[in-house]
Length: 146
Image (cartoon, rainbow, N blue to C red):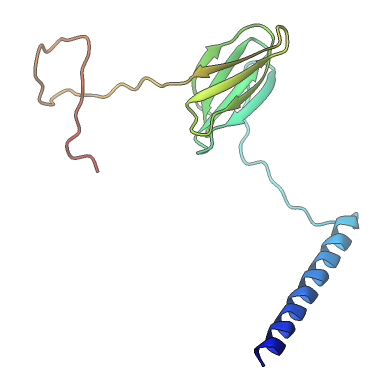
């Protein structure tokens, strides 16, 4: 009895796959396919872009330009900074965690990786401290961080 139910379920499943793939094939051949799209973000760049990568978390955009630099933007289009690169760098990619950028240089046939870190100023005014008040380095400890 279970055998007949299993065969019936498989037949229904195969029929649904063949029907959906036939419809997909018909839609793909149709010149009037229904594709909807819209521009999500757009901003003016200061120089000609050669390559672009997004960080995997979608928070940063790295644009390689013809001026031998990588411009680093927020996803909203705010410029965070730039990194100078060697002449001939023609392509960039990003490491899975966003900690490195990979560079391909066609002029000298090299591959390079560069570490990417960001300096963040934290306002510690009024916070308790040990040591000299005007020390060149401040280490902040967040004991209530969760």
